[in-house]
Image (cartoon, rainbow, N blue to C red; front, side, top):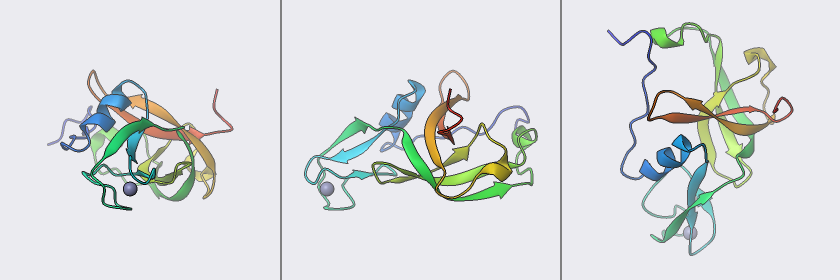
Amino acid sequence: MPDAAKKPAPRPSPESVPYWKAAREHRLEIQRCDACGRYWFPPSQSCPHCQSANFTWTPVSGRGKVFSFVTYHRVYHPAFAKEVPYVVALVELDEGPRLLTNIVGVPADAVVCDMPVRVTFDDYDEEVSVPKFVPLKAAP
Ligand SMILES: [Zn+2]
């Protein structure tokens, strides 16, 4: 049985360790190609645009828009019982790449495609913070 109180935490791959380290410090950083200048996500060892293996982990604006989303009404893990309904979304960053994430800070039925959002960080525990997004308008 899963621990009812604790959400399953992401397990970083060797490629994504810098992403999670930055997230723990509440910074959103993704890879940017040193050759063609484009960003990408999810993390990988070479640029998906030009195949260069030279890149730099680069802070991004943390702003984007909801590209697509689904609303979960069913509890698949007990730690999420208090959160249903919740939104799992694909957010397209202003820099281009899309992240699979959650939209928080707004009722699930208020989420719409193209809604402007900005990143926020959910501190799961002492080691892991998960980037999530809130509506830009509701941002404090
Ligand atoms: Zn490139």
